[in-house]
Length: 405
Image (cartoon, rainbow, N blue to C red; front, top):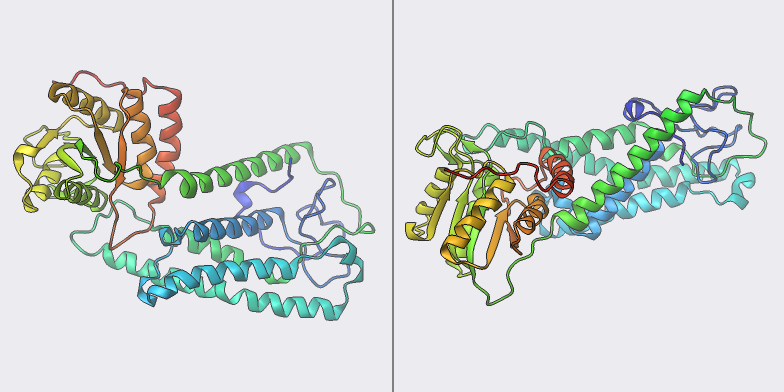
């Protein structure tokens, strides 16, 4: 198990210079050969384990998001042109790889480093860090644009902090640790001895390291390899019904940002003959006739504005959660003798929709609404899905619906 510092210090602990007798924050007795360290006589600082985690996390997340062509989920590059949206994130990943290679010192070369070698590596590392500063500047522009959108009356303010701001804070924390000023090299055999740590600190560090490693790996796999994949009907196949899952509304029964794009996708599917009917399923906490927080009515208004025939639309005012919506959709499908269904929601929501339909003995297709003005992921929604999916999977009776009146 990898040793490490507490997650509470992940953001606040900076790189520390090498001082005899104060190496505890840098390495432990069982430090693996790949740990970030430096020889005792080197001007390069020894760095704490939390910065090692941050160093790895940024490289892994950037590489996965670029390889899966989903970097737009945390940075918006549309204002710099079409081609820059492709090559700029790729160039940043290449610079991170170069930075890591420049700082990597093979075990056989660790004892032969000279001052000239260190200076040359430092210059190359500093140059390789320039694209990271450019990415940080673009994230600042993205953040300003987000708060400009929040001033518009038709923009859903349900996310107070944009994804780009979270990424910016992490990136600035990493840059503040001066990653161009420490090496990746094995511990020297003649390094000063390290005082044995306290047992509680070993346990806390190991637990924090495990939580960080498992949590970060799981999040990356969920986001880029699992959650964002729709399962549309095969070409030429028309489904009997599409179910639109509710979300936040704005005052006056206007669809919020996520709900609007979900409904527009359903309208597009109907107009192109992919589905024959629509079920607009959502919550109406003040009653079906109320005009406050009424998700089905908000979706209906948008459908009618796009000239969809009312006879093709069924309103479900009792879709209080994902399981309720799937349960009610099954009852409606049985009543109309419908066999095929498409679940329509935001892409992060699709895995739980597939699971909830499967638990109601329905093999559903899924489609996602695609945002236009603000495309970045909602971290709150992603965390909710990271919790909600395993809860639905482990407890099929969680949110067990009552018969709708």
